[in-house]
Amino acid sequence: MSGIFTVTGRCGTSRARRGELFLPHGKVETPVFMPVGTNGTVKALTNGDLEEIGFSLILANTYHLYLRPGTGVIGAAGGLRNFTRWKGNYLTDSGGFQIFSLAPFRKITEEGARFRSHIDGSYHTLSPEKAVEIQVALDSDIQMQLDVCTPWGIDQKEAGRALELTDLWLKRASAAWRRAGEDGYGGAFFSIVQGNFFPGLREESVEKALETETSGVAIGGLSVGEPEEVFREYLHLTSSLLPDEKPRYVMGIGTPRYILWAIEEGIDMFDCVLPTRIGRNGHVFTHKGPLSLKKAENAASFLPPDEACSCKVCAAYSRAYLRHLFKTREILCSTLASYHNLFFLNQLVLDSRKAIGENRFMEFKDSFLRQYESGENHL
Image (cartoon, rainbow, N blue to C red; front, side, top):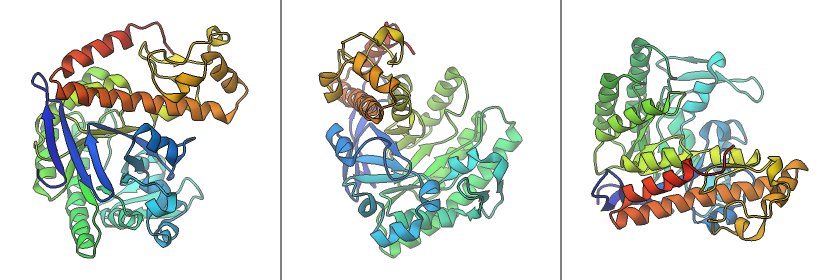
């Protein structure tokens, strides 16, 4: 065991591995998918729903919580866990991706990122130190460094400048995290690898990320609009450069294909808003591919959403009923579809862990994807 993470099992035919994260509010087994609770809630679901599915680590959004309700309110509550009454662990992002998404309304300098709030138009500056300060106030179990996110299609000079700032901000954030630790904060801290889609910059970014004291490493700058084959190429390259003893995290992936590809490359952690977002829009994962509940063919289908799923939604409700809920804009459809989608992905990760332990992950992955991608369902 080293730091907060230990490897407990490996696949003999790929980089896939099992492990354990030791966090302030309980152990987390990996690989692990984290639901996204942007505003301190996973949309349409209760804490009890998430616990029932089996989650012990969820993601909350620093940018959104900083703007509303604000760290003063959350700090007065005793941190995000006390505010939301979530019993498990929280990983919080730094806000970098949200600021990246506000391109017309932000300015990046060495000091940090100055941006305009999407809520009321007010201006704020988020420095690497302030990102740490906010996440300490949230009492995050894992916090992320502030980084400069870059999109698919930029040139190497722009990517290199973003990498330089990300490294500069990492050093400052790491120092702020260590100071917070001296004052009693017990959360972990992850660096983020950037470098866009240039091999040399990726290698340089990994070297810089590992020079600074952190608890784990995240692979940034993937799933930002690039083709699938490019995603896989740079996932493979970047993961191959990371140390074995630290947990590895890829942000923003939430389809079965991308999750299984990441596990194959030795990634331990991933998150995405996708399963709940598509649930609210009437789509569900199934073992035969994604299914659009709103299609007319489901109007009189009394099959469960997924005949191979053991969740409580599939045990009790039909496609016809869920379609009816969606068409009549009943909130219950969002709740049931989101619950099923998160259960589906969590079960996929549980099955992957089991397959790694039995040294048959590649066989499991290939079998699952054959059925999923050649299935009868489609959006």
